[in-house]
Length: 163
Image (cartoon, rainbow, N blue to C red; front, side):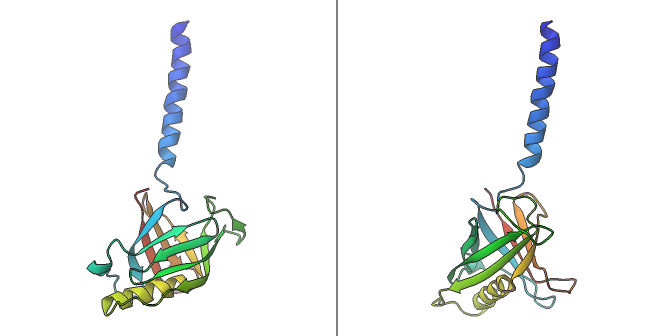
């Protein structure tokens, strides 16, 4: 009898571990610090993160807010998380397909120049586009692309986290 009880228990525990493993790769949008690794502005300008901004450009999401830094200047704003029907959902809802940014406020006393300013303006330009479609190319990665951009190479932002 002991063997019969253990087998279902072992199968149940293994099943639970497998299900847990499947969901671990999806870093939560909130409670994570997202590093900006790429900003795609157009097909003619490949994304290059200036070495001086590496690790400084980041975003963090709250339930309806975003705070971050372009590497040149800090910013704050509001964000709505929308499902496939355009209905507002919680930031933690896995059906959120679109992030809609608004009311971005930037402190512009950066002291940046050249490639740093290009990156700064590119990041703010994409965030300022409003609605960005969300995809998760890999575990711990978000790709936000301009939902209204008809181009094949859409404007967008690639973010990574280790959370």
